[in-house]
Length: 122
Ligand SMILES: [Zn+2]
Image (cartoon, rainbow, N blue to C red; front, top):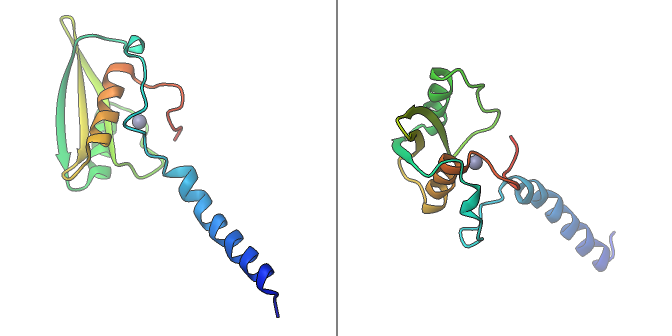
């Protein structure tokens, strides 16, 4: 039989062990964290926004269309610079039909900055 303290310690350890992967892989972007627009690669971006009920499938099709390796994880959204037109870059965003401002903003940032320090690696 376990002592009360040891039982509590084991329960907390088990809880942390279960939460660790969630904490590690489900780091949502902080919508209030400031970043510099000076990192923008382009000032002129035409954005198109596709929404789909199966965002994984839609992103896989986008990657295939532009010969990009498929994602190794399930995605909430994706974006890709698809063309350059005069002085404009064209960026295509795919989200699920029901999405969030945070997800859409994340993809918009990709359209302007491609990637950034601290962006999760997949
Ligand atoms: Zn991203």
